[in-house]
Image (cartoon, rainbow, N blue to C red; front, side, top):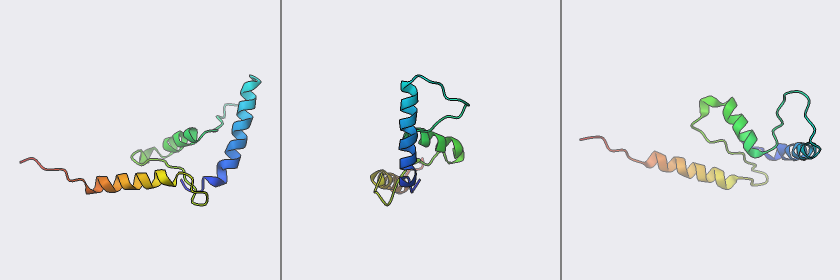
Length: 90
């Protein structure tokens, strides 16, 4: 998922609101879950794109360089899997 930097400020603001709300021990009206962490967004994406369960969800930002190392690590892993030879039985 590229362009994570476009959501970063919005997510940070929502997280601060959620921390403040929890500190006041108040309840949120409605049943809407607030996504405030990268892990929660990742779980949501995997839930929505369940048919791509084999593909990792990696949030990146080319502008800031956020998680580009993880993306390259995933590319190397997939390339290594492509090179792997599985012998057939004799």
